[in-house]
Length: 149
Image (tube, rainbow, N blue to C red):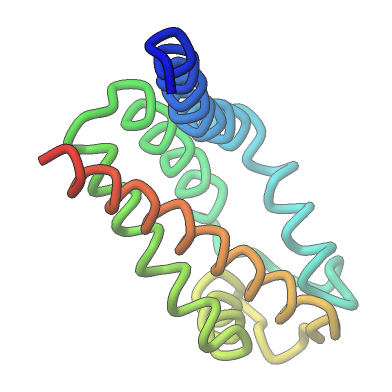
């Protein structure tokens, strides 16, 4: 590989890496600005009867705070961003391996009436897919950190 091709490849890899961070910044901003819409989307994907759920009063504040943390930490990068990716990888592994239990735990945590909500058949697959995606992003970042150390 000549030096021009190597430089182009390095540039593409750096852009891809910054795109992942940019995606997390954007996700954090959307979550912080529109916590009710994000929660509504989650409920429509997760439950056959989303309108029957009674959210705990603190839920939207926590969703907004999560968005702020994800957005700011992703924007700043560094060690905080590495820890965020590690945490996402762990949560992704739990979600991928135990999607129904993950969903049941979350439902009991965030709703006043979890026993009245019916899960959709597709949601465990969605959770598992997101879990695998989180693990992939986390492991890729971990591998990259180890190779540059």
